[in-house]
Length: 170
Image (cartoon, rainbow, N blue to C red; front, side, top):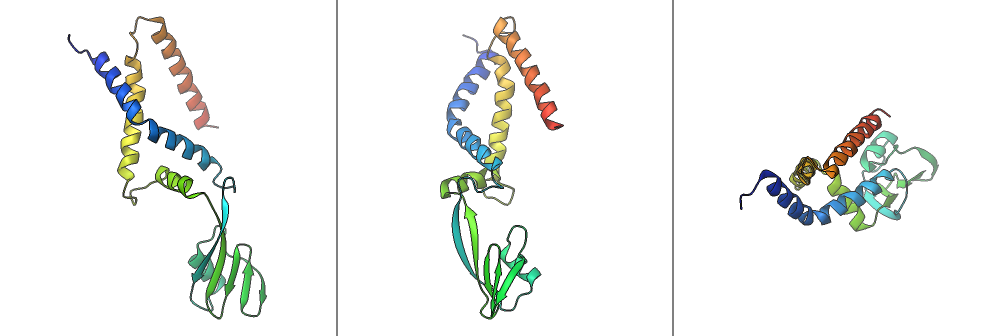
């Protein structure tokens, strides 16, 4: 039996799909969770203590703590400077900051999803992206071109492309 390109594509598509099922689920879940990253959805409060230099100015404190929106002092009582996210002892340099964090597994999934070239596993994101691109292309070999399923599939693909273009400009 001669192996055609279509048969080869279907076989690779099938087994690559099975192989990547777990990571596709992880990217789907983390992608949905990242939609809510500017909220406290699924997050819990964590108090982080940091030893900083004493007597930092507001700008230096913001830079040292890397707090979203910066540090804006609300009140000062003695050596303690209070701000929305916590407090800073200007005499000792001890800062206590309230942070909202995802549970560890969701946090790890989100960091993997957002990996850059600074991450040791950025190549995984490239490989996964190329695999998804292969799925897009190989799906056109799943059915013979003369079948009604293939023709309907082309119409659905075109509709999906139009929807994508619309979403890009919304």
